[in-house]
Length: 171
Length: 102
Image (cartoon, rainbow over all chains, first blue to last red):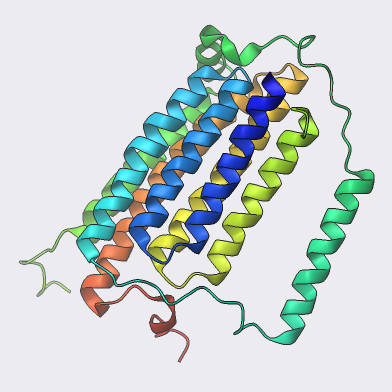
């Protein structure tokens, strides 16, 4: 049953991710991105990380995609020209095809990691208390740094998007 | 049908990352390039959660928090830059944003 769900969500995620790349209209691409993130959230549920699935839905599919849609409608760009590979030089094309073939071949021959039976491993990601414990002990410094990063990002966005009318003479 | 093992999840993660990278390379609209960057970040979180689940550790799950936060900050700053660029140049097509190149 979990195999079936994994396959359904995997195909769904990959198909909608391909839609992000292939749709010429940016609104369709953003909606495809949202569906792809819903698929990823489903995969997280399959991995017993319920909190992370909820967070991906809330932060990515809710906030970030909504922000993208706002900007797409604000800028009102016309549809893209069809995405194409024709502009690539021939050396780059041969190199890319060679790299993809080498990657797939090495994955199929030697890329098999030992996969323990999922029933024998404790599902730590399902335990909410462990997240809080880790964030406030082992990862306390990264949390502080991330808070600082968010502060800097907020200041940067304000400076970038606000028009400073009276400051022209200073520049 | 692919069984839901660690290899299956990792292959899916790699495929998602490759689709995102392809989009970054071939799209000309800056907004869509940004969306493909988000796809690549999500692919890396999928790999982290899969490793964490199959090894019985917690660290990969916690790292997803950090990636989410960095992605949110990145999107906010990036979209502000794109809007400022559009105000200045009236375009967000990558082909036409080549002032530094010439």
